[in-house]
Length: 284
Image (tube, rainbow, N blue to C red; front, side):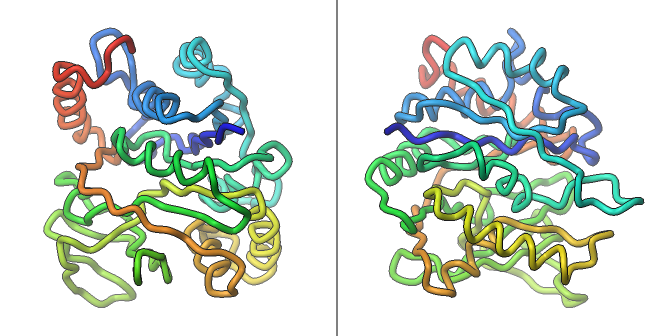
């Protein structure tokens, strides 16, 4: 059974200022998602599931989904606002996005952010792992922190503790500058440039939905629902710590690209344009 690619695309990109998942990065109108899906299909993935909000469904399909569905089977899952209290304008985060797939995804799957470019090597490693993975044998791609930062503002990164090739835990840092300095709980520090970080490229097996459901019900009872986020790295860390799963870490030396701010676009256009000239995306 071929693994599935699950794409988290429900965010509108408030700091970016628009539907950044659909922003063209090539002259013929292709976006980052076109290249991620191309890489995943080449690595053996059999279909794509887009997690989107229902109110953006038509725009997303017209700008992105319909084009990609010509190259690979596509399905959609809506990230709902059912449990969100009055006054909150966005869903609960990445953990909740994956929770919304619990009745749809039955095979091993990888998850990615819609506005991130991961590179071809990452999909081949995760795809190969998922093709033989048993229940509870998860994987992730870790990038070097310095290869993931934006010169245009602070970013959030999941800082990974890795031992003997396996993930021990992930700590979320929400304000990291381009020089690797950060603010965490009011304290200022600097992380090493080689620090492994998660960019939400995870390889998972369907048993994860049992643990996500339990964690989500606990979140609803104990979190500040007006502002707290339900992060998928936290769910995976808790699952590992409880002894229910392992996470093999594939360390990737490639440069990661993403659109956090509108000013990030030019760097991405230049980089992917170079890959196209080098022949990495023939026929796309």
